Length: 357
Image (cartoon, rainbow, N blue to C red; front, side):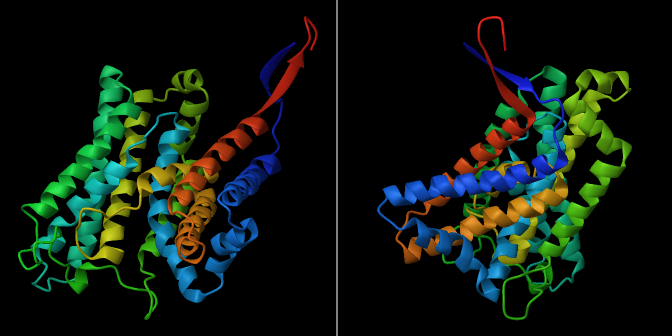
């Protein structure tokens, strides 16, 4: 007897849409077993993680705040993953984007220079992330170096660079020796959308990026080239698409959006640079991208689910004394379930007995 994995002849659109939902359900069941093994009630955990955060207006706002950087980063990762290149270093591009974008707000922190500083800082954040993403892209297309390794290792370079800056040349002289930059001026910060709350204009930027990405990937020749290069590289070459140019373009867009997420987070919430400006957004966004089936609109669903687990995990730590690391564990389980569901939708298992199937 032998097990073969063979492609399905035709996969319905409904199956592809429902597979992430099924993956979420399976992941919740597995998470419930883990919670039960820890001696806690799975039913209570389900309520705290997924129901309670939706019960109040301020928690809805927090979902949007936590989901904003995930939406931006995952929207960029889609370009890479669809073209079959693997940008695993969005966390580093996020960090460099925050550093580049903070140059002007730090320079003009006490001059009330106006909102042009905010606009310029957003563009500088995108440029910083773009330039940093081009490093693994250039090494990939020029020397054939694995973009997985280079993009991942560059994450630690970026984080150490940020740590050096806020402890050294950019440290606030009036900050009681804390490792942080000077606070940004109010005009350098993204405006709040709710008077008493933390919801800021970054969510509007994220939605605009999603809509633009949906148009580019679905309605342009460039988006078609990205899709063909990932699904059928030989066909892409025959059609005249330049694989190297597509790789560089995908990394550039991905890095720019990750850098934008970094400066949006700093100017939307934090208000200054400090050693920790990310909740592993760059890595978590990989799960968001696959949960959204590598589709810009699907990213909204994926970011909502992941943000819900983060917010629910914080509540569960307080209400049920569950470890916060359980949230990261659940996100890993969710990613495996999504990938497994995608494989089962695309392929089927065939049992062969001797020479017969």
